[in-house]
Length: 426
Image (cartoon, rainbow, N blue to C red; front, side, top):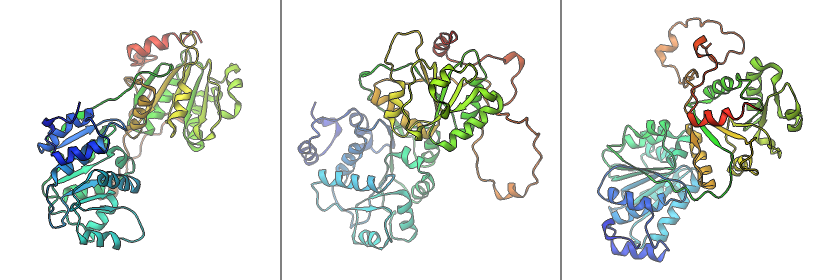
C-alpha cells in the first residue's frame, strides 16, 4: 500500500519519503498522522522500530510550509545527545525545504555556540530537556511561538529523571499541540505529561513477531518499587513446599548481598550466595534459595531448577533470553520464570517480548503483599513537625504479619496456580 491520500501529506514530502525508501506507511503512522494533522494531542505507544520517530518527522515537515523568521515553531525533546544527532540526521534526509533550519541542543562544553545558532534562526529545535531548560533560563531559547511540543522516547526521559525540565518547558509554552512517543506507558510517565496534555488520543501498536524459540513459562509481577520487590520475594519464599529450589537474579553484587541478608533473617541457612555453585545448590538438602548477581557474567546450568526469579532484569536482554530458553519442552520438570518489574523496567520487558515473539503473562499481586510507599522529600512544615516514635518491628520483618485466615493463601492467577501446582513434587 502506497501513502494514502487520507493522510493529507503534501506531494513533495511523499516524493521525498518514497525516494528515501519509505514506500508504505507503518501501522503507527496510519493511526496517528490523521490525528496529528488534525491538531489533536497524541500519545503514541509502540516498540523500537515501529516507526515512531519517522511519524513525527513527517508531521513536522508536512506542517512547516513556511518559515517564521527563525523563531522556533517546533520543540522536540529527546533523552541524550545521541538521540539529538540521530533525529537531526533523519530530518535532513527527508527535508527538501532548505529554508527550514534545525538546531540541536545537548550537553557540551559551554552554551555559547548553541545560543549563537539559535540567534541565527531556528524553525525546529531538537534538544535534551536539561540543556533546553538551561538555555531557556538564559533567555537564549524563545518559546513564545512554539506550535508543536514533541517528547520522543519519553520512557527513557523518565528513567533518566528529567521530568522536571520537561514540565517547566511545557508550562512555559502558552499554547501548542503536544505529541508523546514512548515504548511503554506507566504511572511515572503519566505523572510527567498529565499537566499539559489536553484530552490526548492514545494510540498503541504492538508489533510482536512470530514465536521464534521455545521458552519456559513466564510470569510478570509489576510492582511500584524496590521495597515492594523485597516484600514480594519474602512472601514467596515463605512457602517451603512450593519454592523448593529457586535462583534469584539481581544486577550487582551489592544488591545480591542486600537481598541475601533480607532473606537470611527468616530463611537462615536455607539461602546462599552464588559462591556455593549451582551443583552444590541442587544437591543441598538445606539450601533452597540461591542469590546470583548478573554482573558476575558466569555461565550457570539452570537445568532442573524449578523457579527462576529475576528480581532485576539484566541490561543485556540476551542474558535473560538465554536463561529462559527451554531446551527440553514438554518435560515434567519444566522451569517457571518469574520477573519483578517496576515502571522503569517495563521497557526492558517490551524489548524481551519483541525479541522472543512472546508476551510475558502479567500476574496479580498477592492480596497480603505490603506495598511500600515511594520516598519523597519532606515539605518544610513537615520537617519541623515532631516525629512520632514508630513501633519497633521484629528483626528481619519485611512485611506485616498475616491474619491466621490468610495463612498460606496467595492471590495467584488461575494460570499461575496451575503451573505452580505441578511444582510441588520437586
